[in-house]
Length: 520
Image (tube, rainbow, N blue to C red; front, side, top):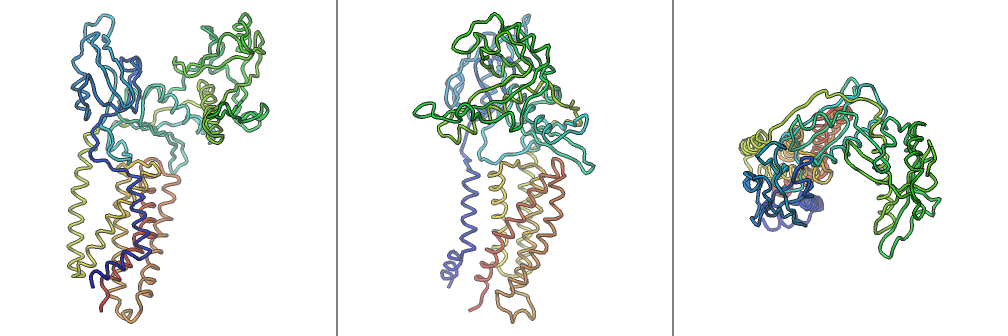
């Protein structure tokens, strides 16, 4: 009899759908509890590591031939270096020679090699700053700005952060109930002092021909971003095969310069030679004194004080579709760089919070302990209430499955699991247990409804469940739409959890409890 019930459960389509979703979540989460590596999260500007070529997100395999399993190994093998000491850092794809530098010209002590490392993640689940530590900064525009300008500022902050050698960066817009606009920047593994200034400042942009400065941010009057004067350049034939294996897609957009900048450019280019249709010097673009791109200058601009200039380039990839996407991405990058020095509004730091990773580890430990205690308490209560393991155990297994599916959904969409998300998971699980109790009560303690069929009982239970679902959904949507930061995280996680439960786990639970509790 038990085997027969198990076969019926396994073959039910609702249970099969649940199993498929669990497998998808497993693939998305990609658990690897045995991974022992350290990963570079940030590289200090001008440090020995940056000079050697190390970059964020590289995984450290060994240092001086000694295997690296965690950040403690990185600290042990890179500390106590003397000036000019050289260590060899092996990453997944290359070896780097890092030579220790003095702290200053007068110092006889060596500074650190200039990296911030962390233990390599064991899953694809991203954790928020509350759990891994870092800095969260809330920026407020000085005046209300358009959606287009808001996106531009977010792109600018992302690009500037990348230039400073930082990874694990989240830049998103937010608002409050009063309609105030904000930009929230979260950066893991860095201190407030290091990040506050360069995130909030408007930026320094400069374009040079050779060593001559021809225009700066304030000289760029307009950068075209509309379809009328930017996009894939079909006038030159559009995308085409660059080689047997590659496609190339040309793009273009126009910019307008001040008359003074146009004149400086004319003076800087009038004596340059022409080589195959281009001038012998390139136009170099600097952001915060860092070279970020370089462009060829067409011969038609030689000595010409042109105030309207067309910027062009190409994107390359193995297919036409991906080459088109690469071209659009490269075009947007250049547009952002050219606008950087003349952002439409000044940003002020409204709030800055530094979070210690030690607190996050302690919270996770306490949360897991609390979850185990709560699970045990709920199981005991269900056993007392129903006196059937066939009811209590499926409820707890279903709740744990819901948590796993929520984590899988977070991994798929790239949502960070932070304190707010954990609160949303708890709320969703609590709602799920309540719904499963409603299903069980309708099935086992229906009074006059005992005369009804199982189908009628489950239909009655789900009418209550769907009513509660839509009530909670409409309560959460305003928090998600207008909420800032943690409110939005709580709302999104709760919505995902309730949706997963109502449409996937609870129908499967209803069928499982029906089969397990039916009489001969």
